[in-house]
Length: 448
Image (cartoon, rainbow, N blue to C red; front, side, top):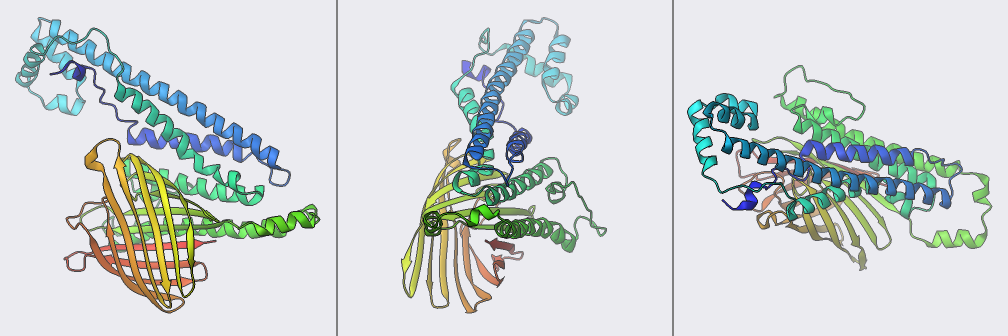
């Protein structure tokens, strides 16, 4: 066994529960800054001061967490080496068995027989001489950098609206929507990891419910899954109405701006936003929700996803919008993103769509370069071809390639049926109709 294996840390770059906790702490800190902003009195200088404080605080928090991660790695390796030295030096077999059992999880140690522990003792004595002191290796430093990036960038979406939006009122409300969605996602992830109902845990108001007909009742599961998705949409709609209210109740001083300033602002392209939540019902697997948020202004495209590349995995994207055409309208957006969570890496991606008469072809894809292992690299895609006989209804074909859940089908094909009302749309997808149990996806979205 190579010497480095004695000092190799078993720590992941934060275990899943620690990841959720760090993101929650970061969000709470950012909200203490954004919540202190007075919409009625805030100017660009106040917003700038708030941004410096919020980003500086999370920068410091990320550095501290990275240092704590290194200290944890060093402590874990040190304890392991001390236990190994003690086991190798003891001449009392019973003492050696107690030392070995003390380093194992209690459940595993309780089922091992003395003979099995003695076998471990003999094999440990046959190992090469371990080092005297624990040391940090490159993997540990890379892990600390990963912790810093996770803590800092996972809270960055909350302050993005203040960077790109000129008015404090709309920026604050968009920021609150982003924070609420992220808090819901953290609760959902925590529910999955603690064995509780993830949908109930995802409610940031602490509300929980149980279907009286049992957890296996399909209608009850459906209600539990769709309700939080609709809650997110309602929050976004409320934010949209609040934005409208903020516009109509603006101080009179804004109405007296100079004509030059008004014409300049009118010439700038406005922001557009969208939020969607797709609920996956996978045969012989746990259902989950995949939310997506986008923001566009002119050429700039920003996007964040969760449970897309993998479960309990998020991604953040920036892209450049191209568009054109007459009867045949087209849009194309090359993107670059970062992926963090159960899958960690960088990903170039794209989006494109073609519209002609009542037909639409759209596709999105990304290739994730997994920084942990080359086997984790994968090309993800989602494509649709649909026809809209009327404005509020469409149907067509859909295909996807994903690793978010286990399937023996490389490219899944299916059908889609969608309905829309004003800025809200609902679409149902069904994949693998040739199987005994197809996969269902229910998607709801809103744009504003």
